Image 1 (spheres, rainbow, N blue to C red):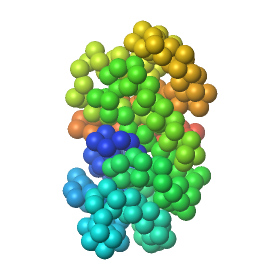
Image 2 (cartoon, rainbow, N blue to C red):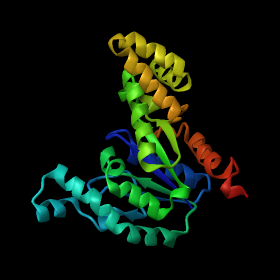
Image 3 (tube, rainbow, N blue to C red):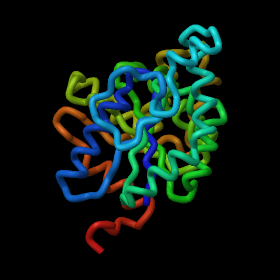
Image 4 (cartoon, rainbow, N blue to C red):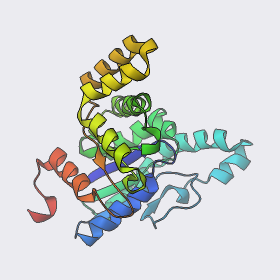
Amino acid sequence: MIFVYFVGTAGSGKSTLTHAFNEWCHKNGYDTIAVNLDPGVKRIPYSPEIDIREWISLEEVMKEYNLGPNGAQIVCADMLALNVKEIEERINEYKADYILLDTPGQLELFVFRSAGKIIIDSLGKEKSLLAFLIDPSLATTPTNFASQLMLSATTQFRLGIPLVNILTKVDMVDENMLNLILEWGKNPDRLLDDLMKSSTLYSQMSEGIMQIIKEMEAHTSLIPISSQTWEGMEDLYASVQNIFYGGEDLERK
């Protein structure tokens, strides 16, 4: 049983990709289930087998604690950890090979508070993977792209499990811009050169950031994915296989 956590900034396409990858897996004969871990989401494009909203309601938390939406989101995120045993029991009922977990819309609620780490540790750190989604609209300049890589590196540092970087919504990006972003992902020297050109005032900082990215091995080739056309789904599945099974297909042993 492998746990794939879809994480990323708000609007990066976590729920949409969870749905699309789940559908792709089913079509190709792989046994997966989808889990919604966002107590505050109102609509999601799939019917999760397990939904944290069965136990936690954002609106009820707002009323009970007299909080606004932001404060209630924080309380709900912390309450996730209190329901981890119920989540684990429900997951075990399905006996699926792959568990796809759609994390809260605000990245910080899962990554920078204790709930994310507690959930990962409880369900099984050794069999967990982070799929970090990068919205191309937030990566159109060298500075923005490097910032996304730093956020990815910080996410892996906080949660301590393998991570793959995914460039989402590639069907909505200008081809030249897409090729440039992918080049930055493959060629750190090109990214550093472009960083130096765009922010000479902070050249020392740019060099330092790139050194951190390289040392943390956060600078990896991106997996370009479209949830609409399913482009890249096979590459994502192959990455999971390579990390946990050395490329051997679990379904075809």
